[in-house]
Length: 318
Image (cartoon, rainbow, N blue to C red):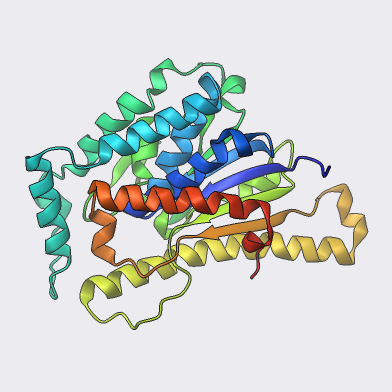
């Protein structure tokens, strides 16, 4: 029997599309898979950050079953539940599908996304009830990607000292959110710089054998984006995937150098990369869609794809 790999999991964000990451994580937490790997760390950005943080909090408390429960409760609570919410969801998606759109500064009105997300996290993540000792919050390690817009830097917040402001900052994409204040500066969504954090995995006290990436933003598109929302979305996809590609290239280059110069093994170790990607030409407005139909479909798709991490279908580069 091959040895159980030590792994780190990184989850991209993408609005409601991050339900795919939730499905993948749910699949990996299932009894048939949970004993086939040793989880050292989790990272995420935006919706992927919510998934990673919820699983992390459950594992710290009671284990895989608790991690799955918190993850699923969050996404089920996020879904549309009543007629008023359904109407609001319909108009949000419909507005985004108009051929011409106008972006309005979130400082001209009071965005509802931030308080809604904060309420969800306070109920399902509940940071106050986590152990206060940093060493108990470091297994597994948690890293949350965000963008410091004042200094133009990508950052990775750590689970040992994580706050709600830092987690919300990871999802604060304008104009749905205002910039979030934390650590004496201002943050936007990690989409622009760390989507998701990966390179820190190479610096863990116990380095992983493999890094598993759940990629929500499509690497390729079949059709040319022409409508303004399509152009904006593809621009954001390319930006987010650029940051990820650079981090994966960095790890691949180290692997190549190790193969050429074995003496580097005193400092580094080869790390295999596996990527499972959300497929299908989902449009930009569907990232705003909280209907049960799309969230459940994405979670099922992700849960089915979880098995890919255990065979050649996930090996990267393709």
